[in-house]
Amino acid sequence: MPAVLSGARRLGLPLSVGLMAALPAVALAADDKVKIDSGDTAWMIVATSFVLLMSIPGLALFYAGMVRKKNVLATTAQTLATVALVTVLWIVVGYSLVFTPGNSIIGDLSRFLMAGLKMDSVHEAAKTVPENVFMMFQLTFAAITPAIVVGAAADRIKFSAMLWFMALWLLAVYCPVAHWVWGGGFLQKAGVLDFAGGIVVHINAGVAGLVLALMLGPRRGYPTDNMAPHNLVLTVMGVSLLWVGWFGFNAGSAVAADARAGMAMTVTHVSAATAALAWMFAEWATMGKPSVLGIASGAVAGLGTITPASGYVDIGAALIIGFVAGLACFYASTAFKRRMGYDDSLDVFGVHGVGGLIGTVMVGVFATSAIAGPDVKGLVDGNGQQVLTQLYGIVCAVLLSAVGTAVILKVIDVTIGLRVTPEQEIEGLDINLHGESVH
Amino acid sequence: MKMLIAIIKPFKLEEVREALTGLGVQGLTVTEVKGYGRQKGQTEIYRGAEYAVNFLPKVKIEMVLDDALVDRTIEAVQKAAATGKIGDGKIFITDISHAVRIRTGETGTDAL
Image (cartoon, rainbow over all chains, first blue to last red; front, side, top):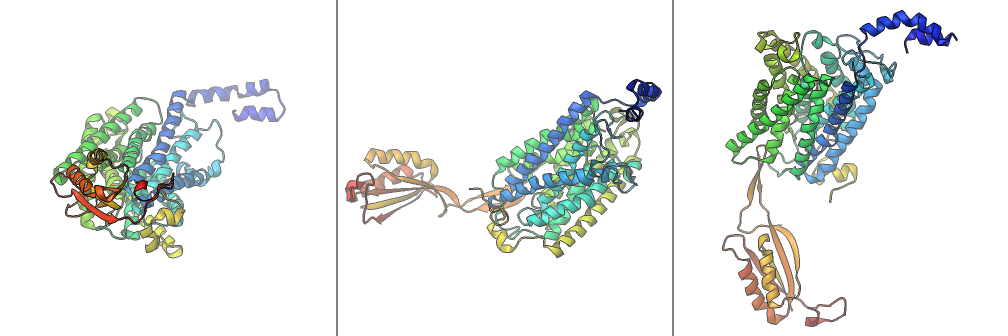
């Protein structure tokens, strides 16, 4: 209720007096106030649900199928616990740190514990949707990002260390980067374009995952012991949920039920399919057989790569982006990883990191006013500067992600220790960390 | 009494079972096992990581027989389970000193 009206009622004056005093104010407000759109709101509620499904059980299943049976419950516990933990931290302080004005580096605490969030509040970035819906939508992004990171630590991280890492990383790395790119921070002001999280989610998680893999060290017996995935059916189920859920991730980032969202959904799907084929054919040609893990991984690579570009590019660009994503991520997750020698158990860097990097640069190439309106121009529109702007954004995010992750992990390692004991690792995390097993 | 243990290729189980029924063998126990002999395993590849899988899936059949049936049973199992390729499996015979039918308490060959 407009302040004038509630003020009048508190003074005991009849509503009619208050209304008359309020009329000019209300009239002005009605002119410049954007109204809540039920179509946009309905879509955003659905999109939020889709993105949450991407975490639980999408990512959980994706990872679960790829680990050894003795660690499958621990892997799913990590994703579940991360969603729960991030939820609480987000509503307490995370959302405020990202989406309040603050300064160029970080938001302020004006939305601490959702202070001031009313039923009619809206956020600048999503004026036709209630702020609580926008906040929830962003929550699901904040939840899936650290959950992606922990894939690099599969089979060997302590559950307590993982919980601490999730909490600290969310607040010290995710929130700043998200504020820089989406919350009015310096990258957004510089014109860096990231429609749905190429930088904020994929590069961020990918780089952090690489640092985590390097600092944890490889799994015992890597790379000679048999560490084959124990059930790729789970992985395919997970990828399917990720694929469809990604429509919420990318099309939802349009924060509107309109053609922009529709196009984002389309290019997302095209990129996923193209990348899946590219990876499949590349694997077929180089290793002799097209694996289902390859087709699934290719799809995820395509999805991650198109993410920053999904609201800015057309379908033709999506074909190219998907094709490049499939090939590049295939190379990064196989030959490159083997040559470098690090044990990124679930290819967090190879798929999300490399995908996010390529996609974010591709935005600079393929972003076009034809899709995104007059304020957006990429190389195809003659604006090569956008590519440089994207690179600037990438460098800043990579720096914070790498350094921030390294510092957090070091602190955790010297206090409670990151890694399980060799005996626990050999016997398995399920029974040792959680007292459970899959029979 | 003798126990006949046969390790065979899984897809041969039905054929072996039919051959045994024809002989009058009353019951058997079947277990899914893994093993290798001279047959080499397959190679699995996951995102470029190659794993040699040394153990192959096999089926183990166990049955306890009257001494008189043993030779004919060995012949029947061997004929039914053979493909002529490496990995067909093996048959072992051990002695059984005692047998009891739980329902009736019959012992010895009456229990078979």
